Amino acid sequence: MLDRLRRMLGIAFGEGVLENADPDDLFDIATGYVTLGANGYQPTGEAAVCVGTVDTTTFKNVLRDVDALLDLEGTSPANRIETDDSGYTWAVFEDADFEGLVTEVYTVVDTLLEQGVGDYLLAAVFAFEHDGQAYWIYNFKRGQWYPFVPQRRYTRDTETESELRDLLEGELELEQEADREYPFWELPI
Image 1 (cartoon, one colour):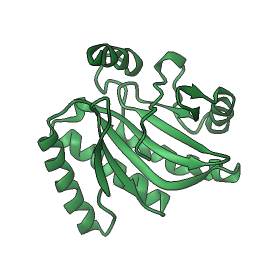
Image 2 (spheres, rainbow, N blue to C red; image 1 turned 90 degrees about the vertical axis):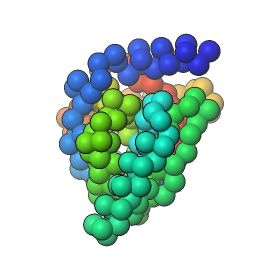
Image 3 (cartoon, rainbow, N blue to C red; image 1 turned 180 degrees about the vertical axis):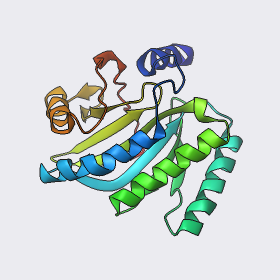
Image 4 (tube, rainbow, N blue to C red; image 1 turned 45 degrees about the vertical axis):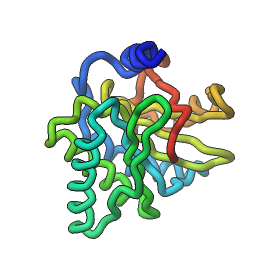
C-alpha cells in the first residue's frame, strides 16, 4: 500500500525532480498574502516544508545547520520536525511576521538544495484562516502553486479553492492540471 501511495504522489507531483521549480518562487506568496489579506484570508503564522523519504538523520542534520543559520540571522529556527503516517518528514515553522516566515522556509529549501537532498523536496505549505483553514501549496516537482481547502477528511472545498485561484491569478504561477494538486490530509499546521 505504501508503494502505491508513493506512485500516486509521483503522478501528482510529477516525475521530473525540480525541473520547473525555482525556490525563488516562494517569495511570490509574500506579495500574494497582501491580496489574500485584503479578501479576508489571514496568515496563521505557520508554514511547513515537506520532504519525501530521506534519511532522517541527514534531514535533521541539514535542519540543525539551517537552525544555526537562522539563529545567526535573528530569525526563528524550525519549531519542530514531524513525520506523518505516509512517512514524509515535515519541518514546521511558526512566525507572526509572514515575510520572515517565507524567508525561513526559503532558507530551509536553499540549504536542502545545497546539501544535495533537494531531490526529496515535495512541497512548501503556508496556512491561512477564513471561515476555516486554507492552504497555499508550492509543489517543488512542478514549480507551481495551488490552493488546498479541506472541509473534512477526504473532502475538499473546490468552490473556495476556485475563488482563491481567481484571487492570485497573475501573482503566483498556478498549477493548471487539477490532478496534480495533491491533497495533504495530514498537514502538521
